[in-house]
Image: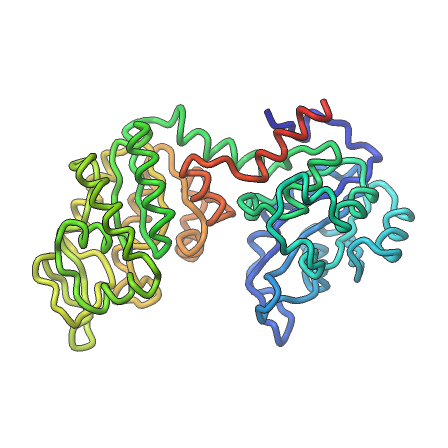
Length: 403
């Protein structure tokens, strides 16, 4: 079992708080374009008001244009918290150590981008991470580790799995909320349960489909987007060269046979659209799947396919939605994504797997209508495959070790 904040005394303690402030940013201007992830962590930071809060986080990764300092992040957090946030241009050196030594309960300190340290970019298990210079030094600066970074829970990196190895560690409020809501999908969710799997992360989606169908978690699985194209190909339908080429380009040709095996085993439980929308002569054209032209890309679910899809959703009590239905960035091909979101928002228990879908939902103003929108796309979908996330395993181990 994982411990949470309510089970420990944090008063006057030095808390190392791992969050995920990795956000869209304008690298030239250093301006944060979306502070959603900041807002999600506010409750945990506010809950540490009687402690010295030392924030450990990252922005992007080495080699990316937005791999940058966290000075702007500290400034944005200060605005949102309404209290001073001290930015330290250091991770565990003398400057950081002095700042922590001189801090008082109620102070909030943000350390520099932890991925500026090469060790944080390594994939290591807990024991290996504990031996790194990064963890040996960071752990000396705090009394307790709080992991609130669900967005990086699927990463086996030193600050995620190493700190719980060497110090008492608990889940923050956001981490606790994510685990609670996503676990409910597996046990206790009102039935019928429908999973809607789309977007371009096909291998993860197919892993989820197999897990939830073979374990009786889902009553139906709806495929949309590139995931649906894979299942159409698995049915022997010719999906056209542009869509076939995209599957090859993404490295998912091997998933067609896996999709066929799922269809053979679970048949009627898997919904594959009977109509799609293509771009022909520059405009949206809807056609049955057995009439897809060789030279036109599939860019959305078609009207009759969408109606069947919406009927399933409306008869469901739980919906898990991960990934768009098509090229939603273009108005002509946003219909499927938008209508599926509207229908999913009306069910009794609704979970969204983060990423692009969450961004569309917020843009539509539907975010308050869903039970839970995950802050971690990759972590969420890995959780839904039934795998134990490294961060969760590390917190469980720490709870047993430091009980």
